[in-house]
Image 1 (tube, rainbow, N blue to C red):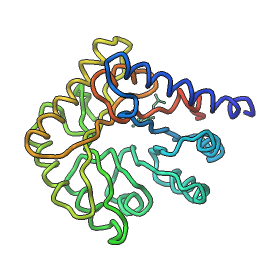
Image 2: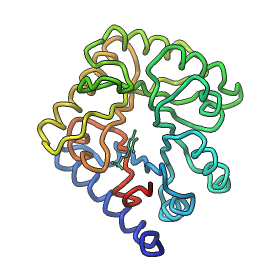
Image 3: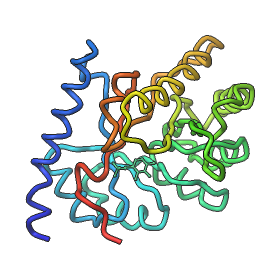
Image 4: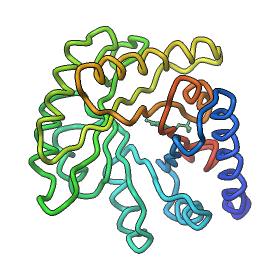
Length: 235
Ligand SMILES: *Cc1c(COP(=O)(O)O)cnc(C)c1O
């Protein structure tokens, strides 16, 4: 355990190095890409360790687990992103405790989040989740259904408690880099179409431990990395 904890700063340096090389390989500035550390199923002590090494933004997938960590780490002034499946009965906690949500795919969720966001808080930053690759039963608006995505974007943009920032996807995992790139390019294309409709989107949330290079090559502005920072998740 001690060993795992001591390696965290080295892992952070390695991931930042990967982001930098991937950006430079396609002529982008590494400064355009932010790193979200996905701390799901890792203890608050691991988050603390990474925060001490300079990481400020953390992503969580399970509301009750997240709230416990947020509470334990209150003093650190971290930025929390909710990236897990979202149900209506959890929107209040997300609106109260997070700066960002990446996983919205229904107007009802947007309406609840906006209504529940405190009036004196900054608007909740939102990404709409798209299902690339068409896996049945997965969250997200099907990539083929642009009109539904456009309607959802219009809904998000109209709500005072929210700030629509962009799109998020978790494409089916593959080791084929060209396939990874095709999937990420699809999300980038949908972002471009929404921008053409007048939405000011600055975020493409895509790429994880195994495919962040392909995501950066296709325009990711935020990569969500768990395993490469924290090691394998405990069960
Ligand atoms: C778990 C998770 C990640 C991180 O995955 P790794 O492969 O561990 O880097 C990123 N995004 C989402 C939505 C996740 O659930």
